[in-house]
Structures are given as structure tokens and as C-alpha cells.
Amino acid sequence: MINDIPTHRPFDAFQAFVLDCKLFWTRQMFPEVRRAYLAKVAETGAQPKTADDVRALIGADTTTEFFGWFERHQQRMKYSGRHGLAVHYAQHRDLIREELNEPLPERLLRLNPDFVQPEYYTSIDIHQHPGGVWSDETAGYVYERGAKSTAPLLNKAESLHHRLTAQVLERAGRPVRAVADLGCGFGGSTRPFYMDHPEMDVVGVELSEPCLRLAARRAMEEQATNVQFVQGDAADTGLESGRFDAVTSTMVLHEMPPSHIRQMLKESHRLLAPGGISVHLDFLVRDDPFKLFVHYGHSARNNEPFMVPLNKMDMEAAHREAGFDSVEIVPFEEMSGALAPGMTAWRFPWTLIIARKAA
Ligand SMILES: C[S@@+](CC[C@H](N)C(=O)[O-])C[C@H]1O[C@@H](n2cnc3c(N)ncnc32)[C@H](O)[C@@H]1O
View 1 (cartoon, protein in one colour):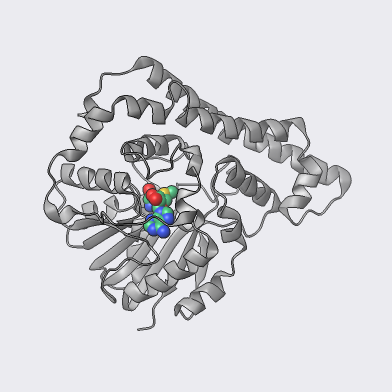
View 2 (spheres, rainbow, N blue to C red):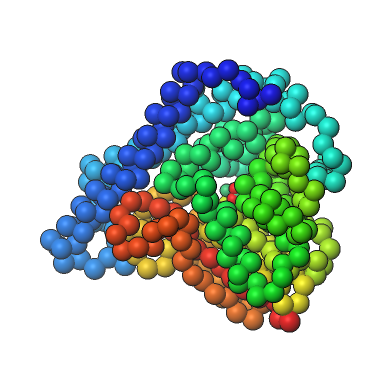
């Protein structure tokens, strides 16, 4: 089994180094760049409003340049090179294939052998993951392991996925009997629904076959009987209209161009029962030009080009066009204290986008 691979010390040591780099970047470098920015604002009396205004002020500073360079290269090292994730799991290809080929209960996984991936998806090595999260049979494992160092302050026991699940159930205002998790990846965002709520009918929809196969494998290991993973496009799932009390997604909108997001919102509306709730958790910066500058920089450095157009989208208009009457956009506290004024470390601008289908 892949989890039984003997500890490979150089790989573990290297990935621990990458994680430490990310932690240093998060806790030390980000506040340092922010301090330099605030000092420059005070010194010049400038009133920056946009990411470009901030770039004009501090973009050429050595600290800022190093901050960006460090982020780009630690992410590259995480995946590529001798002890990178993609290389490591490729060395264990036979074991992974064997594990994924073990028979699963039939209802767990519905793949589509004729599925054609959208072009926006195949044209980018998202997150600098060579081949993206879809093209290699080991990609689900690479992604699962890689997620551990993406936002290193997050606490697994009190995970953002559990927090989102709690928010969905609370905000639904009625029993949630069925939920669709669009863009479920390897099932991290689907798991709290199916594990903690065995009475729920849970469906995870995802483009990537390797991710879906790992998601189904993990659900089998958990002996879950109330979940199905389906290969499909979140913008056109083929699932039954009106089946779900809640439709959610986590970190998916920012991986799509706006035209696809608009389609996905229409699809969310179609899938919902009357009175059902749509909750998409993603990244939006609304207030602070410095955070905008860092976020847009992250988009470029991490090969996630659609973060910028997502941030510029008119969410109200897109939801109205999709059939919703209104939308609520609120900050999301992904861990205790994340929204407290004393939080100086870097964090993603987690945001909930919530809408309800008319009853
Ligand atoms: C950042 S991951 C998040 C995965 C999961 N929701 C989680 O929170 O762990 C984004 C996922 O969206 C998937 N994705 C991107 N575009 C999609 C689409 N049009 N339909 C379904 N899934 C999509 C990607 O394959 C990827 O697995």
C-alpha cells in the first residue's frame, strides 16, 4: 500500500524543508513586506488604491522582490526536482496503480471514459504541479500530499472543510438531506459531509479522474456508504435538477475563467431544490490594496491566472443571471483567530459567497 512505503528520508527531509520555507514566508516575510509598505505610505503620503499603486511604491524593493521570488521557487521545488512530489510519486507508480485498481463498491465512483476536459483546465500546470492535477495517474496522491503545505497555519483537526460544512448546515436553515460538492478534488471538502452526516446523500463532482479515484478509495477506507464521486464538469454536471438542499464548492471558482463560473452558478441554481442554498468558498480581496497586490502576485507565481478575473467579477450580476435573487459575500474564518486584528501572518483571503434559490 502506498501509505506503507518505507520512509524515504531524503524526500521527507526535503518536503519538511519546503514546508519550513512556506512557514517562514507566511509568518516572517509577509509581515516584513507589509511593514515596508506601511512605512513607504507614511513617508510619501501616497494613497494607494490598486495593486498597481502598491507595486509602484514597493515592487522594486529587494524585500518585496525576494518575497515573490521565494514563493515562486519554494512552490517549484515542492513539485519538481529530485525530491519533488511529482517525481517521488512517479517512482511509486506501480504501487499506486495497484492500490487504485483494487475493487471499490460500485456506487462509490462514476467515471466517464469519453469525458473531454475543458481547454482552460488542460492548458495550465495549476499550482506549478507538472501536468496539473488530472493528467497523470499519480496526480491525486501528489495533490493530497501537496495540500499539506499550501496554507501551513491551518489545523487539520479543526479543518477549514469542517468549518465550511458547519456553516453550510447552519445557514441552510433547514435539514440538508442532499449536498453536491463541486470540484471535490481528492475528496477533502466532501469528507466532513459524508463522514459526519451519515444520513446525507453526498455527491462529489470533479474533472480529474486520478483525484476522483483517490477520493473514492479514501471513502472506501472510511467505509462510507452515503457518497458518490462523479466525473463531470461543475458547470454541466448531468445530475438531476432540484436534487440538492445545498450545493457547495471549495477553492474551485478561482480555477475557472469567468464564463465558466457564470455557467457553474447557473448549474448550482438548477441542481438546488426550491429554498436550497448555494455556498461557494473562495478567495476575494475587497478592501486592502496591499493584500490585493500580494494576491495578484500569488496568482502569477502559483500559475493560477483566474484568481484575478474572479476578484474583478460582478458577483451580484453573475448570481442574478444564474437565477438567484441576491448574494451575500462574507469573510470566512478558516481557523480560530484568522480574522482577529492581531493576525499579521499571510493567509488566503477566504470568502463565502452565499445565495438561496427562491422557495
Ligand atoms: C483547489 S482544488 C480544491 C479541491 C477540493 N474542493 C478541496 O477543497 O480540497 C480545485 C479542484 O477543482 C477542480 N476543478 C476545476 N475546474 C473544474 C470544473 N469545471 N468542474 C469540476 N471540477 C473542477 C480541480 O480539478 C481541482 O480538483
